[in-house]
Image (spheres, rainbow, N blue to C red):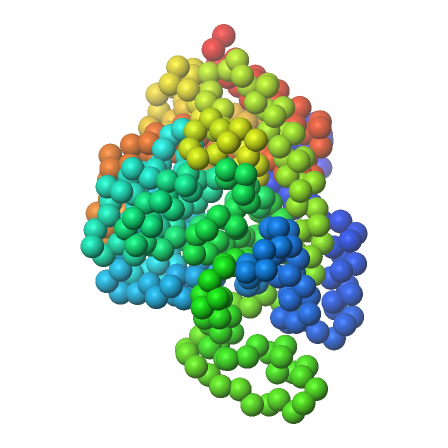
Length: 415
Ligand SMILES: *Cc1c(COP(=O)(O)O)cnc(C)c1O
């Protein structure tokens, strides 16, 4: 290592999973057990997940190998197909929308409410056509989307609702946990940087027995019984029937072992992230920035609702200093934000942007002829936003480093 590199402060990563000895022991136990694919631990993870959400006996949890797969299974089970339109937010990851295209249906992207950064119910209403079949709200950053308005709108127009809850473990809306809100299905992600992780994984949650049955069959090749039943039954049980051309998106017991132990810490992880977010809020209150929306400030949430704090998204205010010296950016007027990120990186702070809106990506833009001016709120948020490091394993001195870097960058430029 050169002397110069040795002098640099350690890099503060944007995200890092928190994996302890309990997870490692549970995975080793699985490896020694002789059962590594979907089996007893995946089943226990599903049961524990329902318990985590309050234990409603009508609620079913279906473990899958990604949230993408869970969204796909949910929409497939609801019968979404060619000729149908599914409405979702442009301000999301492409997975939210791509699953609609898997099924041959069309995606209708709408703008966000800048007060919540979640899908705007008025924009959904304005986008309705006779082909509209479903809405996929995203609980952006871990703040609940305005579910009361969206569910009422869906009921009025006979639409299905599948929640993309990839950021929302745990999040509440009007006092009820996301996953129990009365939509048709809710899908959580356990990707490496999510609030709990199984490496790759997801959970589809529903109270609809027909949806659950179809999703379980389609999760594993369209076979009417799962592999665990077939291979562990005491009676001879070689016989099975294929009832549909299904998929292969089951969660392994190795991954479920991780999930079992992560889930037990989900609330402690959330509390730690919330404490870091509160420190950020206090430290940035006097800066020319827009702080992340909080529960109760807007939308359908109440002040005491849970925010999962998957992301801490800061936006440069309109009167923020010109960090980028008027240079052009990618996909809009992003010069100041891009320079902000570069200056934080120079101070050895990792950050990210959530998201490059779908309307700016070539596939979505060209397929649906989208323009940035169709989505003014998402576009403006994108041009001015960045996500700061926020993860439960973050140490106080790392939080201090982020705070100092943000303050130095903005105040240094203003001076
Ligand atoms: C991470 C993410 C997904 C996809 O989750 P996977 O488990 O990686 O498939 C979907 N939607 C949103 C909003 C996400 O952040």
